[in-house]
Amino acid sequence: MPDLDLILLHAPSVYDFRERPAMYGPISDVIPSTPVFEMYPLGFVSMVGYLEQHGYHARIINLAVKMLKNPRLDVERLIAGLDAKAFGFDLHWLAHAAGSLDLAEIVKKHHPDTPILLGGLSASYYHEEVIEHFPQIDYVLRGDTTEKPLKELMGCIEDDREPGNVANLTWRTNDGRKRVNPLSFVPEDIDDLWIDYGEVVKLVVRHRDLESTLPYENFMKYPFTALLTCKGCTHNCITCGGSCSAFSKFFGRDRPVFKTPKKLVEEMTIISEYFKAPLFLIGDLRQAGMGWAEEVLDGIKREGFDNTITYELFDAVPEDYMKKIAGSTESWTLEISPESHDDGIRKIMGKPYTVAQMEKTLENALENDCAKLDVYFMVGLSGQSSQSVLDSVEYCRHLYRKMDNDRRIYTFITPMAPFLDPGSMIFEDPRKYGFTQLYRTLREHKEALYQPSWKLYLSYHTDWMTRDQVAETTYEAMIRLNQLKIDVGINDEAYGRKVDGGLHMARDLMRTIDGIIETTSDLGERQMKYNALKIEIDEAMRSTGLAKRELRMPGLAGIRVKGAMKFLLKYLGL
Ligand code: SF4
Image 1 (cartoon, rainbow, N blue to C red):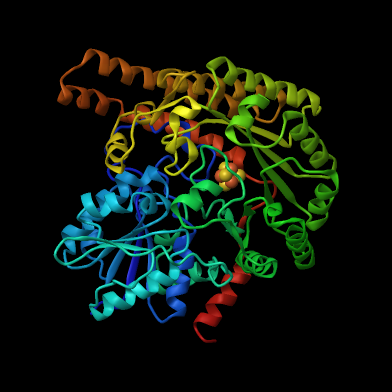
Image 2 (cartoon, rainbow, N blue to C red; image 1 turned 180 degrees about the horizontal axis):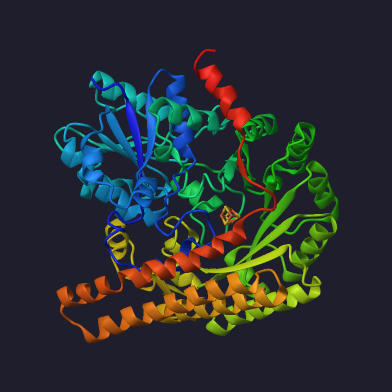
């Protein structure tokens, strides 16, 4: 019998990205991942931790990171050499539809008798289609919290029992019938399901394999850590698959559930022991009420963290709460996503504040010594024309002027891509919001990901912009915003020029790909022409990827040797 019970594998967005020439575009520019989305979901860590607590041995192998770091890695050979009672893949973000399902097929080829499970919000949404159309997947664990059902499923696998009583499970019986067990595990208490980064360190030591466990390619150069404050959301942004309405309709959660402030702060303390890295608290603390938010901020103050803490804002902030945030810790930053400068568009998108309220918030933050303010705009919104996108960039110019060109303000603009979130209000009722949806099923989304450019796998066009316009306007807006950041002095000239060069190159390549499609009908010949662009495409993506530097928080980030040593001594029983 294998020693390991479960291996959780994280796939790149598209399995053969190393050979396949594709312009993945600027979609991943505002997250730490590269365009192949190598960052595994936080749930991987809590699942491994939970299974270990209950006597199972599990590990994570981030195949995407391994492939990025070892261009010649023989993935099939690596997979053939694995041994476990079960394998698991994530399909949380739909961008992994091709990579996860294709790699699961390879795992099945080499381990035909070993069950493969799939989890995550997209897998939950498409659970029936997965079981009906993807024979490589045996089980889908549905919902936002699956640690306990996973443990029960592992028991069934071990004893060779049918999992008829495992909550949240969609599965195939031995005679090929689909079974959908009730979505009955939707816990109100999530304190015991936490992200223990000590667990990650343990995996590294136990398997003597750092690479497999890295959350993303450049984690060792710049560690960035994140914590969930809750499951679900009180808001209803129309494009969000994690909104209140999506959770209630598809994931069985009528209202969000929060960690206790004590547990959240404890989790932060453990991370801080290992990493002198930014701590990003996912979710606006005020969602659980002001009392809860203040308790968290008081706890943070008591602990006296020296990490930079990033607070996410879903709404404008009154001055007294801003002072409370400012008083919680030495170094703190804020993130806010107005999406558009236009109050009307923002209102349609489901954001409850005006631009005037946002500006007041930013002013207050700067006055209270906020170290960095990240402000996110988007392309492809309901009611948004190309001109409106460019007006958002002009608005950024106004914002900088109004804030005395304060270099702590970082503005970003990205396309709403590649896909509309399944379960979001816009996905469920696209015409209501002026959207035309191009793909609906999981198979359609998967197929789209093999296209040679992000514009071609964009899953929608709107009454205000075609896909061509979304793509062209995105590059134009990014080029202008980059120039604005050079003008304001946020980006130095040399760095800004490199980013500019990458953006122009990416736009030209996208147009070249369009030209190939227009002029070449033979598919084989087309592919040869795409292949000839591979080096340029990789170069363009490297240059635009430079812009990730702007995501960094002030101060140094790294691993604390003392924390790692302390763990090692404990692990070795010394
Ligand atoms: S995008 Fe909106 S709905 Fe989604 S998690 Fe953020 S605030 Fe909630």
